[in-house]
Image 1 (tube, one colour):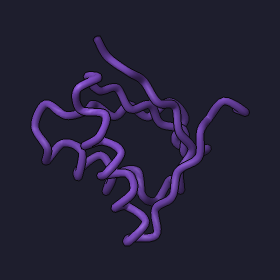
Image 2 (cartoon, rainbow, N blue to C red; image 1 turned 180 degrees about the horizontal axis):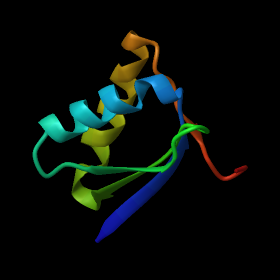
Image 3 (cartoon, rainbow, N blue to C red; image 1 turned 180 degrees about the vertical axis):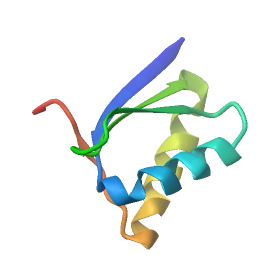
Amino acid sequence: MERTKRLIMAREGIGFFKAILESYEDVALLTVRHGKRGEVEVIYPCHAEEVVGSIMADMARFGIVFREAEDV
C-alpha cells in the first residue's frame, strides 16, 4: 500500500529535494504538479513513512519547508 502527500514548497528547492529522495533507493517518488507554485506530490510505501518524514524534517536545515497542499 502507498501513501501520497501533496505539498507546497519553495520552487527553488524542488530539484534538491528530488535528488535527496532519489538518493534513498525505493523510498519515494517525487512528481512536480505545478512548478511555478512549488506544488509537488510525494508517493511512498507505507513502511517508508518514517523515513520520508525524517528526510522532510531534515530539509529545514537547508531552508526548505513544506506545507500541505489541500488549500491549492
